[in-house]
Every structure is written in C-alpha cells, then in structure tokens.
Picture 1 (tube, rainbow, N blue to C red):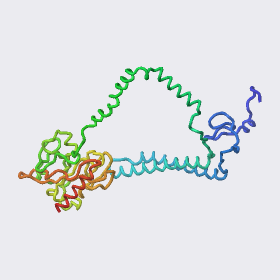
Picture 2: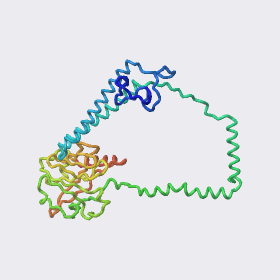
Picture 3: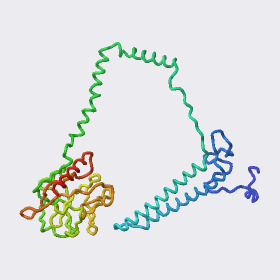
Picture 4: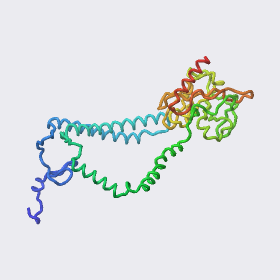
Length: 358
C-alpha cells in the first residue's frame, strides 16, 4: 500500500483489534520494543502454563471482588448516614467491612500474581574476602601518617591540646541538656491535692455542692477541689466527674462506703493516655473517653468495658460536712491517669490497705 492509497474494507478487516488494558500487538507493555517469547534462562524458573492459567483466573476473581467491594464502600458512604450511636455503628461497620474486603482482595490478587505467574529467580551473592590486599593496606597507612604530619596535629602540641580542650564542653553538653527534662517525679504521680475535708466545687464557677441539691438520678457534674480552681497542674490529676445514681443501681465494683446517697466521684482523667473522660450516657450509665473510645461502666466501679484503657477510673471517697456540702474523705487510693513504671507498687500498697481495713 503506497502513501497515497487509502485502506479499503478488506485491509481494515485484516487489522487486529486492540482490547482495552492490553498492549498493542508486537509491542511491550512498558515501551515500543517488540515482545519476545519466553525462553529458558539458567537460574530462572518459569511458571507452569497450566498453573499460570488457573492463577490468572484466581487473580481476576480477586480483583473483581475488590472492585465490587470498592463500589460497596462508596455506596455505604452515601446510604448509611450518621446522627446517633446506632446509625454511626452501622455506617462504621459497612464502611470498614467493605474497605477491608477491597484491600484484602486486592492485596491477595497481587500476591497470587507474583507467586504463581511471575518467574522465580535463583540469585546467588558471591562472597569475597573482606580483608584488603597488602598493597592497599600499606598505601592507606602511609597516606594516613602523611596527612597527620601535614596537618601539624602531632607537631603543634599547643594547638592539639587546645582543640581537645575546646571539644570537651561539647561532650558534656548532653548531660547539661538532660536537666531540661525536669526534676524526677518522685511520688508525685501517685497522689493528688485531694485530702480529707476538702470541698468539691463545680468546675468553672467554684460553687460548692450541697448533696441535697444534687438529687436527680442521672445528673453529672465536672468537679474540682476547692482552692485549686485555676491551678492547671493540680487539675491535670484532680478533676472529677460526679454522678448521681439510685442506690439500687450501684454494683459490686463500686465501693459503696465511698459514696454518699448514690453520689459517686470518679477521676475524669482517662487511664489510657489522660484525655478527659467526660461523656456520659445516662441510659446505659457508660462513661466515654472521646479520644480513643474507652468506655467505663459507671455503676460498676468505672471498670473498662470497651477500648484501649487498661484499668478502671479511680474512685474518690466522698462524704458531707456539717453543712451538707460534699467533701473528700481522702485522696485516691491508686494513681490516676495513664500508667507509669512504678504504678504497680502503689496498686499493691492500696490493695494491702484495703485488706487491712476489711
């Protein structure tokens, strides 16, 4: 066919049609180099053709499943709206399940592709003697000595000694910088500012709390110790949540001698990483931490029922004074907030003290 001739119907019929997703006939996938037939190469194991065909069908199925799961993920995002706890749970399950299936199917397809379709190479790394030859070692030694002599490091003693003197403070600098880490905590992590007779006041207003006024079951207050309303260091450990229960709602995990007329005081500092655990579900009596979704049963000693927190929220013993105001009867018997390496000793001491009291 010359350049002035146009292809006719017969010529067009002879041109092979190209399928989307496959390279043009006679070309490689990544470039225009003509594709070559597979040949036996030493150290290379080609896949069995029959097994490769089976693997191809498996990979195709897995990729198709990944496609359907991806579509399901998009559909779930559109269909399942959030607005309350139940609908949010359904949405999370649908989104998480579909995305999990999509990623697993896609990754499984790639693994099957690599292991059963691609050739396997037997690669041997040759090891040689690590030691340099004598000529090289002699050359390096002479070069080092010559460089040292040319630098004058050996000849000029005063310069060498002042260099070492100048470098000495830099070597001690890390020891000085360690001081910026602050003083050792000692036993301060085990205790808060709460003590016997200290009034509980409302966070923000500083208003003392009459037990007779806090009488609605399901009521909750954020509480701080009187006199420390603006001491952020103290409040980081001493802030409480105060919850009113019906006495019959309290379970065995709650120390009832530390409550007053169904009023329970728990540490507000989550035992996971110290976030404020101040969300309260009145119908389920659950305390929730908004950071990592740790959930505590407020009727059962604030024990963990869900999430990464490893221990309950500590309970503060409370009572009332002569005027009926809520007061602390003592400090927490265990450390509040996240765990630290010496907390186990404090826990053991608290258990021993409880045993002696009983």
